[in-house]
Image (cartoon, rainbow, N blue to C red; front, side, top):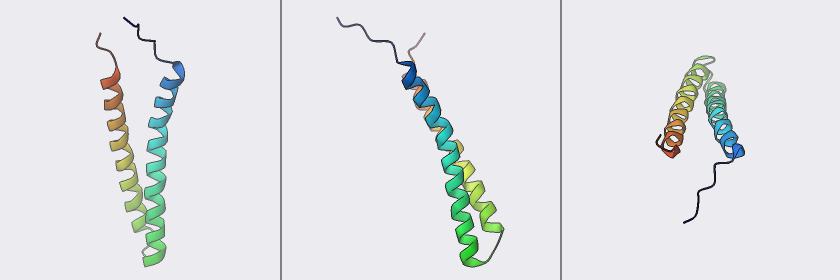
Length: 77
């Protein structure tokens, strides 16, 4: 019977970094989309703020999903 290897510290670091990067990238994409829509429609700053809000919300939803997925991977103790 093969013994399971303990998880690498590097894999744990990668998972934690992916959580932070997900939040940042979602926020930047929402902000950028809102800014571009504002420039196109001339509604500065309203769509920038709406895009920022959607980006932050999407980032938190993705963080919650990632954390739940990581919790499922933990062994029951």
